[in-house]
Image (cartoon, rainbow, N blue to C red; front, side, top):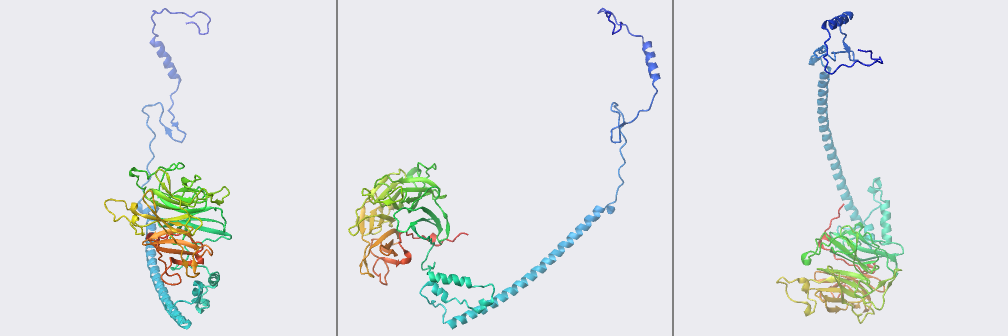
Length: 546
């Protein structure tokens, strides 16, 4: 074979030339010489870098390094961990025993201490009772006697001994500030919330007059329409719906999302669908039945808004309008009181228009009216637009109340007999409407809601010897009586008048107003009485939630 680096031609073998085998002796002598030239040495163990020898990587049967010998066995009695665990268990057991014994000792000591405290307290109470009886005897105040004084605060102070020796010796019963409060209340003659009368809640703002003309009740709470403005002003004022408990505790403001002006009436109604509310009506089910109690809306007659404003009955969020003024007597022009009967909402209006400046005006083309609004179709029907009474220069319908079924109001056509045969008793009822100027007007609750009778609410004032000049507010019916809020137009002294269902007077039976419809008052503390609400039994027994 030519040299690899030779430039000469490489000898080519024919493809079918046989390959000659190399002589075996020649290769044998070569390998023998090579092995003989390399001396045999023992194989060195491979180090894995950790000081230990690994078996030959390439060997298939090489033995691994011998395993280390196991540590010598230690007896459990000589193990320090076992000894510590036993000591700790004993210490814990002893600690628990000591704690149990200490607990028994503390309980016994506490019981003994309480017995001593109660014994000393009982002795002190008996001594105080004896001292109080002795002081009453000295002061001449017998048990059950009425304290002396012209006002409640004078009577309270008359039985208080702020110079008591017992109080002067007790550093924890410093009474000087309490005495100052009582004297200040006596000087200002603040009204007392006593069982015989008083205030659920009272607001006072300098230079402002507060209006509380509308009251509704739901689930043991009172919803009161309030507003305030300048005294004697003829403009509307910012309004709100405030929530109180039946005990007079303020809860929160209810209305949200709308600028309410001078609310004059409120009524909870089944939920209705409105163009500005995305909520579906749950009251438009088959048969037109009323919605579930929880699915209600509060409709407020915003006198300054000339609209019936809708609020969510649970959250108080504004949900649109049930009806708005249309510059017509047959629309809520100056809306006042409301009454719900089945699916019809009756509304009294004063026939006014509120200007952009907030001034209440009475255009000649508008009249005070009684309207009937269908909650399903939102259609508004003009029931009546009465003329002024002979002894009044104007008419302004204000409050509405429903009489009991088949009530005898002295009009034969209004009494249709006994119930039975599946007849709807609401078709045989009458409603009474108060006129701010004068009078009570009776209407049938069956379409077309005809006028049944009118009652003159004026009378000869025994104290003045002349016919009364009153204005009249809300009207309510309870049991066999009609209750009407009123006030003297000259002095603003308020009162509550009471009538029988037929409109005959049913006031006090004794005193200067005996034989008249006056039942409460007149009283300067009941100034300009308009709003009136008779609490139901559930509200009277309502217990305040914490």
